[in-house]
Image (cartoon, rainbow, N blue to C red):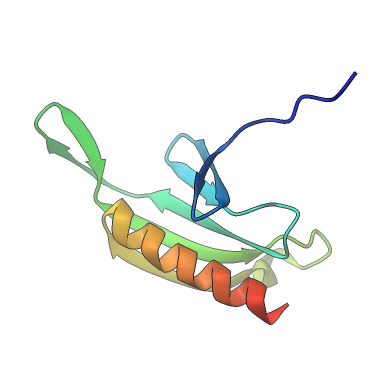
Length: 97
């Protein structure tokens, strides 16, 4: 019997996994992923939208010391701007490998 593989939302062919206000972008089997943390939200009609978002390009290697895991970090206004930077950082980091 074939194993059922989990389906994730994707952005530019990379998986997105959300846990609360934290979003992981990328495949954990790759050398890098991006962690996005929604710091603040703002109201728009009856919805809450991400306002301040922290972005961190991180190594996935478990043998790397925790203080060396973060390669780049930044803060952006809005989830769209954060995802745009995250996709660029991740693509460039994975191309170097």
